[in-house]
Image (tube, rainbow, N blue to C red):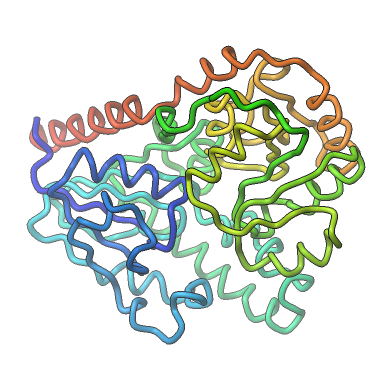
Length: 370
C-alpha cells in the first residue's frame, strides 16, 4: 500500500548527528517528501536533506536563534502545533524533543520515530538546568517551566498513531512516560563509509561527542589521565570552555571535524570512549565499523551495541577509576578487527531504510482498512 504524500518532521536542523542521519535515509527513500522543522541553519545538513522543500516555524526568525535556540525551548510547543499537514497522507516525525506532538488531520497517519522522550523535561533536568549548571535563580525559574513542558509532552503523547523506538532502552522510556507501546528499529550507521583500512592503532583514546552535560566527558578526561593514555576529543557544544578548564591540557580538543577526519581518527584510535548513558549511541557503532573497540558505560543503548569482551568493554560504574582501568585494559587487549566490523554491519543504512519503509506501508494499509 502506497503511503501517498509524505511529510517528514524533525525538531531542528543545526548539524548532522544521529537523528539527522536517520532523516537523511528517509530523504533518500522519499525524495518528494516535504520537510518541516522548527529551525534550519542552511548548510548545516547534508545535500540530500537540504534539497528537499523545507518549512520552518516562527522560531527561525527569533534573535540569535542559530546560537541560542535552546533558550527558546518554552516556545517550542506553540511552534510545533502551528504546523499544518492538510493534503498529506503520512507524517513521519523524528523526535527527540517535541515534534512527536504535531497535530495532524484525522485522515493522516503519523508514525513517530522516537530518538528519546524529551530528556530535559523528564529525567535530566539537573544535568541541563540544575543550580550547579545555571545558578539557583535561573534553575528555580526553569523548574516549573520544565514541569509544564513535561505535562504537555505526556498529554500530547497520543497524537502519534504509532511509535517506533531507536532501542529497547528507549522503548522502555516510551512506555514509562507516554504509556504507549513501540516497536524497535535501530538507527542507521553508514557502514560503507565507516570501514577499516590498514591504519595501526596509535595509542590514543578518542571521544566523538556533543559537549553537553549528560555525555559525562569529564569522566573520560579523568579516566585517560589515570590510565596515562592520551585523549582526543572531537565535537563542540556549550560545555567546551568548562571542559577545557577541567582538562588543563590533559586532553586535545579538536572541535567539529569533517566525516573524513572523524573516520581517520576512528581508524587510528586504540579505543573509543562512551562514558555517558546513551539512548542508543551511533558513535560506538561508527567506531566498530572501523574495527576499533569501545569502552562504554554498561547502561542504556550501549548494552545493545557493544558486545562485552568481543567488540569492547562495558563498565559497570560511572567513575574515573573504573573507566581508567577499562581503558588501560582495552589498550592492551588484542581485539579481532574482523569480528568487530562484522558486528557493526548489522546496523547498516539499507536495513534501517527497509524496516522503516515497511512500517510506513503497514500504517498506510491500516489506515485504508479502517
